[in-house]
Length: 81
Image (cartoon, rainbow, N blue to C red; front, side, top):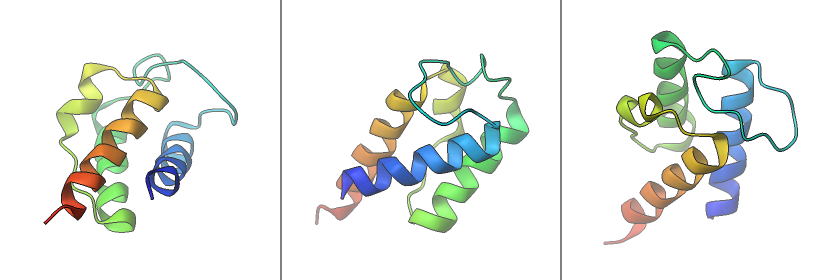
């Protein structure tokens, strides 16, 4: 499941931030992320994946891999009774 979640997060991140395909260690702010893009990313994750994320996590300036793992971990927590 986490691979599917991480792939979905990757797709959302790339679309919202107009990031290039492929591996990248660029962080949210290095990709010109702003508050509106953070809201869009978090809202799409909630809408498409049903996972509620805190917008503040993006303001910690993660790279895609770090953020995707965070979302996947949150999904796993939510799946646990």
